[in-house]
Image 1 (cartoon, rainbow, N blue to C red):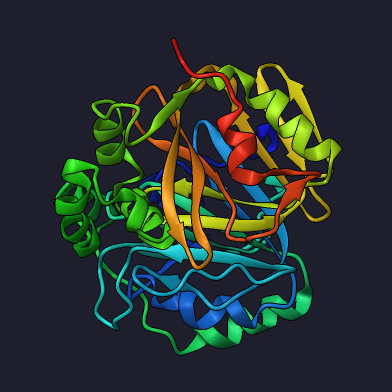
Image 2: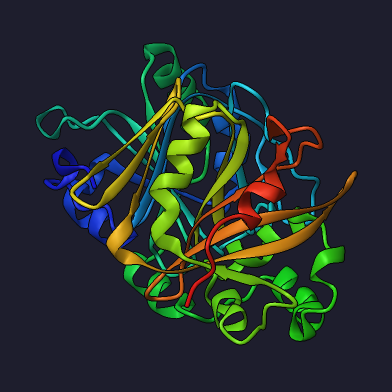
Length: 330
């Protein structure tokens, strides 16, 4: 969705390593380098990217969240939630550091690849001070010396986060969905990018979930933008989600890509790729609410729109009432 990056393929860890050579260094410890280094940066561009959706935001990174922990979205900061464990010998993902490549208009960056080597997130460093922070933090950090192609082959489809297994008994019948807080729903989705969730949603009836006509998404976001209604959105990739709160300022549709703009962020959804969208109930501290989950034709979750605030409304219309007013599918 960004043509100027095409000269440096970043779809996989092996492609990045092959293209940039010694300008690319993989750090040992799985997600741990991101956890320890990223919150120290002053100002970065954080991109959760995929073939059909992207959320790019600028600012400071909040402390990294892990599955099972309370869900937090720090105002004015970039919130990331991951399904990886945080232990020194973790090998469930790879974090790479790349030097700037001026000829390709690429700054110094950190990249996060999931357990099968697919890119899920990238941090571009904007400030020179942040480059110094990164250099100092990685100077003594052990370099991962493994074979990237072998890592991708060995891990492809072989890992399943513990939280997915733990939630499956509740999800099997669908009866307890309304009793689960949103963090548990989100953790289930990011475990594998939403594929298990998609299969289950396709089998559930309207008593548990409601499938809506996803073609109304541009009108919904336009309405939310017009009224400056704050809400939360999680853009999802396998093993990681970037979460943002607040209103959106404006939207646009460019070549079937739905763009939404906020003060320091831009998001995009490829409308042609969307297969289905569901309203899924979840529990909050003040009662119940609804999340709007959007999936592509491969069963991957692109984004989830939700609200954790009890008084978010437009006039007398609350968040849940607004979503329930959307036309159903079929």
